Length: 319
Image (cartoon, rainbow, N blue to C red; front, side, top):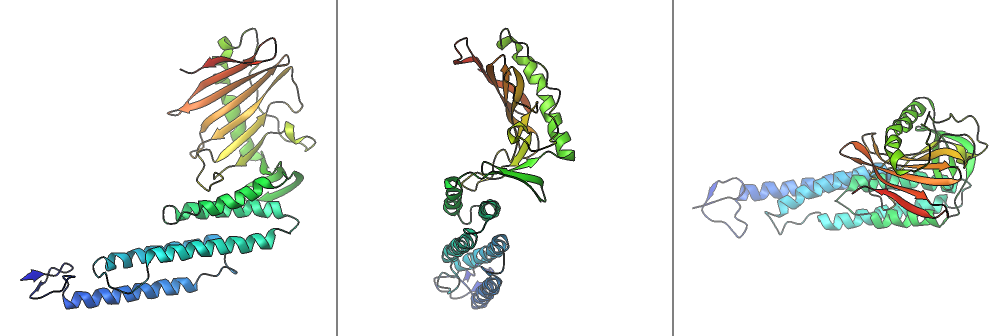
């Protein structure tokens, strides 16, 4: 006597699949039911009506159902049903078609670069949702390359979205510091004073003032003299960024090459500072302090300065 591999019931005779008749019928019914479920989900897909994110979430449900079918087919190899790999290929083609149609729709609009920027954000999110199931990095890279090939757009007219007030500067959507965002970033910048104190011994004959804070944005006369932040949620290939938010800060409202401090702060996903770059102008010489985070502790990674011939020299390197 042998046992059915699915229910362990004793059977007197079995074929190469080692299944009793009851289990064979149940598994065939299950596969048919799951295939019907995929068909029903597929009817919810609409490349014209629904967003890419909506369709992608349906695709994920279809993939999960197809995986259950694959488990059934491992017991009944000859079962005729939806093939997981074929389904993934079709989903990839659908996403590619959607992206091409949407790009053709927006490419001649007056606010094309802004729409492209929003589209890339959605495309990168979908890439993250699909994860290891389907690799669409080649699709995301295609449209990022299109963005990079465009003339950088600068538009100082104020616009709003759910993240805040923004303008376009050299192709990037950058946000003004407002209310809680200003308080958060102002405190972050002032916390860098502790790092600057560590640099005194490595920057000779130079008295560095403490950062008293960053000025509030009162006008848009010169965007270079503003503290702005941008969201950098994904890399150009669609992968999640290690530093999803970046602050570009200034400490003076006007350019000053005799006594000035400005730089960049890169935030980790948990909101803490992951790295930073502080640029110090003092008496027409520039010093650059590069900061890293090691197990949550900020430390100086390197300091570059300028000699009397105005050539860049390394003043300190973390060993």
